[in-house]
Image 1: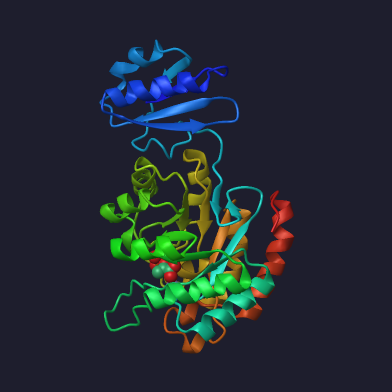
Image 2: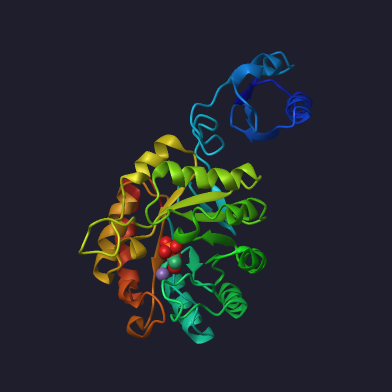
Length: 337
Ligand code: PEP
Ligand code: MN
């Protein structure tokens, strides 16, 4: 249920509604808007109590929310949300590009790639310190040591850092060191991890599960918002299909679908989405054109020797060329780079 306040409602009236919501044992989520404040209510049992809230001072109307997801829905918040990652805003006029290695391997490797992507115009540095690998024998990441390397790369380049937390213990560390917490495809429905991310003080980039529907993705985001963390960015990274020419099928149609249903920003990851280096630039261009708020791209200066995802990592030269193309596409779609 959504309580919409009158335009002239003051802070005391908003607080009155919050008190009434909490007195019933429900959670109140104030959503400030350009015109008026709305208050999302979660935990309630249905629309039967609407009259209770309708009669409170300052209330304009009470609207039932029809979707299973509430706080992520455009029904609850019509304006698109912007999410700050360090000094970078995702969801506004800038097409935000996060780039970097799949995995942090060494100080030298990460700094080399960070310098290159920064020089080409990337806004954020990505890189995994905790890697969810299909095989237990594959490189699992450097852990906290990797987070320290990312922090050093941020120190030198000024790029805010995005990195994955694979479990709650890792999330504690990622929250401490990074600027945004990535929840990977394999953990999209790890509900205890999502609840922990909902209590974090950093923004969350939530990747779509390998075979998750859009509704499941939005419900997972709802877990994070319902715990009080409203700084969530979705990420399409390809879903498993019968495709035999790419690692996954990048579902670009999900971008306008998300824009219709949710106020949250959405990034596209063409690297995991295709799994092949030669397809990263074409799908990046398509993602920008279809309205994505940004990209998550794997870059490696020596991809043939990468410890993770070498075949889909583009070189710094390819990344620079891609940024040049995106710079031409951005104004056509009303964005800057
Ligand atoms: C990654 O970004 O390196 C990653 C592991 O992605 P995903 O969770 O989408 O597979
Ligand atoms: Mn990867």
